[in-house]
Length: 229
Image (cartoon, rainbow, N blue to C red):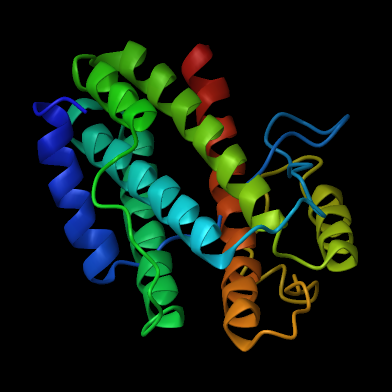
């Protein structure tokens, strides 16, 4: 890792995520045949792997979204992009705090700095401004949220995920996806069942975070389409 922008960004994000920030629930890959801002297909039913690896991975992805959003607040002049970046900071900060509470007392090792690929993206974006920055930032945000959503899907009940996506796609044919905590309350995303109490708590966190991540992804795609025009 380089010690320039990465050191500054890494320390700021560590303070937010590891000391008690919350992450947003959040997004996934594109639904076949859906409009560009629609809900993603993701990877439900993927191998769960260890709780340690899952938590470390989502914490790292969460840190990256907060770091890039902070750069957007400095480098973007588009009020819609800036507003979206602040929402990501708030939502992902909150999700990080919740996850930290869920795994409190466990020996899970938390990341202390951005992964190299995230650091390289942050450094590249730090040198850009204006429309070029907006386009590249939004693309990086889309890619990051697709990865995060797919990771979350590995901890979610497959049938409830299918039902949620079907409902969300039906509501996003001609407008942005509705707020998941209000208009989507009738279609719950359920955690994958586990006989391990700690694993079940982590799975519940993933299920709670997922609709928010999908909302982020939908918004990022809408903003990206606008930025291309």
